[in-house]
Length: 120
Image (tube, rainbow, N blue to C red; front, side, top):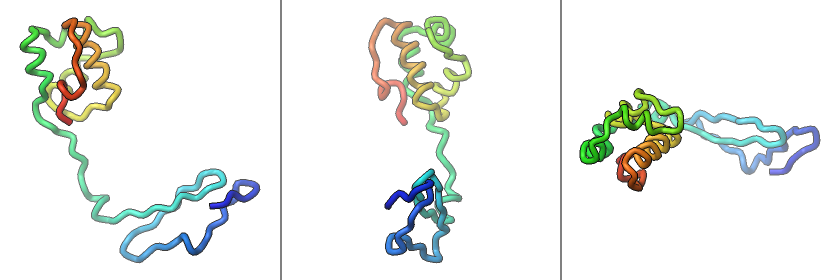
């Protein structure tokens, strides 16, 4: 891809192709066009958000730590709702999982890996 003056893209027609089975889209960035495609079937797939009970529940039970203890020991904005989602296996972002991990480390005084708390 070449960058044209005034952020207008130059499209090489040899690089661009789209068949009729897929819907094509263009994402315009200043100076560039990124071309991609997606299928209608992939759009209809639902994202898995439920992963079942997580190993953090067993760790909290063996160390006799309750959700209240983790919220109190957290130096970040860890909420009971985040902990509830973590234990039930609802999808959490990596940032939220990190907060739970650091709170458990400070509450128990031991070090854990992310894989020991969550199985997704």
